[in-house]
Image (cartoon, rainbow, N blue to C red; front, top):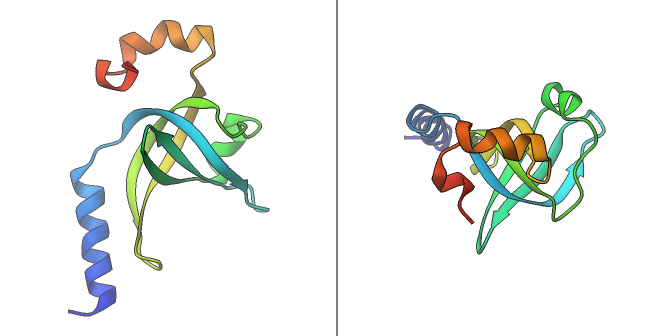
Length: 116
């Protein structure tokens, strides 16, 4: 098996086994790309994961959050074959400090995500 075949298989496995889900975490190291994408990590406790939010979705999100901002994100597990990196593709980002979001979040998100 070649490296390309292996990384393609990993990508299919990651994308096929993990459904889109809401996560809660802290934005760290957000870097806006000149083309409009955002690259950042989502951190909670000692764990963190790399994230990419494509221009289509950043335009809807408004201005980038500051480091340390706690957010809810709608994420899809992904695997970037060219670098062999696991990452999350983010399609929605909502600040946890927003009282309207905090009001509807318990009805829409699982208790495990909301617990802190």
